[in-house]
Image 1 (tube, rainbow, N blue to C red):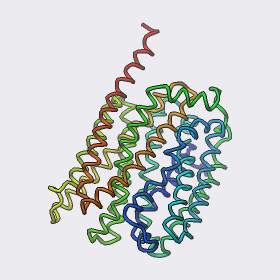
Image 2 (image 1 turned 90 degrees about the vertical axis):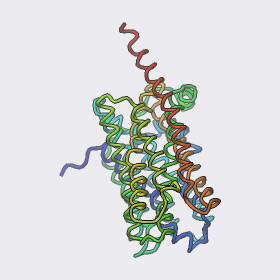
Image 3 (image 1 turned 135 degrees about the vertical axis):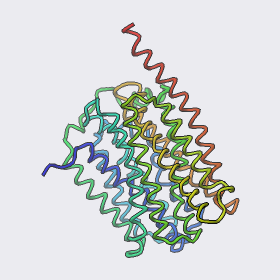
Image 4 (image 1 turned 30 degrees about the horizontal axis):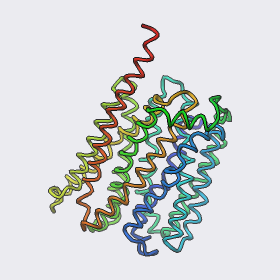
Length: 404
């Protein structure tokens, strides 16, 4: 029986890594009770998984081609498995925070090589669509974790949930190693790692793609990561809260998939970024602003519709940026380092967003201020999107110049 396309397998590996990001939100109520974790510590638990990406993304991207993208992804999945298995034995907030940092390293290594691997496995004509599919790894992985987590925790406690996700990553590592062709680890001839880093840091394109990604990721994790806690505080039954949060996370994949298709049909990347970021700002206002938080079924429906708008149309942003990042890389040999720089700034956004939202919620006594955080990030992202549009236009003019 023929297995999945190798590029599909890469997406599945990314999904198994994203499970470790999404496994925490449904476990937060149990962890706070068992380990005495404060609300701000919970915010750092959500974001600490991004510590490695925040500090090592560019360096790991530059080294990925030398190590081999397939080896890098497998190594990341193994680290996630080991750290996750040990996390099930944690008995203090400090131990959990430390292991979440190691999980962050594994997540970085497992997710960083995805676009580079897909680029090696897919013909150029289908690359935009496949890169859009890669953008679904985060919403599918986190959404699956948000949906399954409460049931697993109810049956085996939060340690059992940690061990299950660790086993999934280990199994995925073995499958990936056996199924992906060995030529995926072939080195790219483009100078050493130091050369790649310098080329990336001295070019405007990687900076624009990376910082725009940060404005997206900061808001997305701040909203989706705390939904189980918000719903629990509102008295929503656990099963309903899990389903509502999982749908809110998973629906993000629709925007990612549409981004790839619309880019292939010639829709400008800037238009997609404007639409995605604008929808995130509007959706957060509907979901959290004080004038929409009155009681009643209609108000609840409006707030949840805002969350769905925030996530679904917001998915246009990462789906577009993965394609833009490949196009704005300085040269063929700096694609991995450019994606690494994007991952680094995405991690910075995810590290900053949840604690900021939690701090404002603790200070104001509620989540009504969350929309202010998301609107500020969305506005910054739109400014950067305009700069990306100008950079792509200059690139197109430069490419057409020899023919004129």
